[in-house]
Image 1 (cartoon, rainbow, N blue to C red):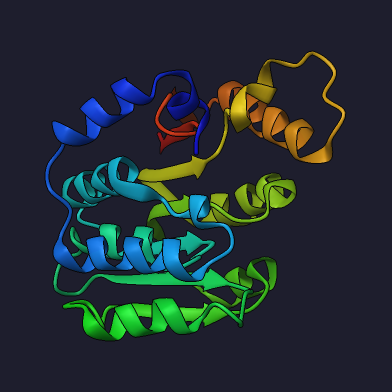
Image 2 (image 1 turned 30 degrees about the horizontal axis):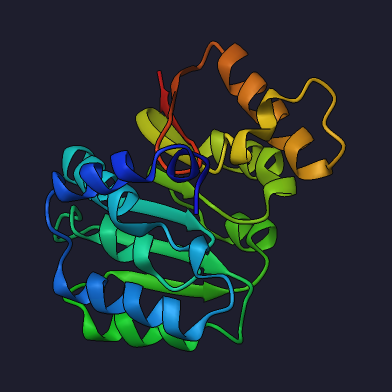
Amino acid sequence: MSYFEELDKEMDRYLEETASEEPAILKKLRKETYQKTTQPHMISGYLQGRLLSILSHIVQPKNVLEIGTFTGYASLSMAEGLPKDGKIYTIDKNEDLAYIPKKYFAESDYKDQIEFIIGDAKEEIKKLDKVWDLIFIDADKESYLEYLKLIKPNLRSGSIILIDNVLWYGKVLENDPKDKQTEQIKLVNKIVAEDSDFENLILPLRDGLHLIRKK
């Protein structure tokens, strides 16, 4: 459940009804995520998945980095726009849940274009010597700034970064946040907005999606 969904569930349903239909494999994955995980709300979901797909089709990324795989919904959404030589590197540290994305990646049309890495993203990113065309960050909120610093040197002009949960259930409006996650999310939003190397906009989709373009 996102901040926006809580404000207007009827509008959220309308947005889904008027969006392109999700592929059957994603519908199946979404259902299993809600059946078998304790925090199914962590899934990117219908609307965000369609946005990721559209952006991937526009960018036609050769190298995609995803930080935070969860059950693989966002990975498969972005895979829809991959060119034939494109590849997604998706990183997650949750070994217990890894069987779900592994299963769906193997069933998908993109099984040879997705590399699923289990480990600490802060360490694994350093091992990947790639120029990133599209990056989706949706993992440990307290590490958002560190992730941004790690990937920035490996961006090209026109690279797209997406950072999820940047409205954080409206907590970003707090002047003096009491928790580390809110504090870090606010800091990242501020740093991106003030960075002359970036163009940016926060989309009020689900729990806020920071859309960033490297100039």
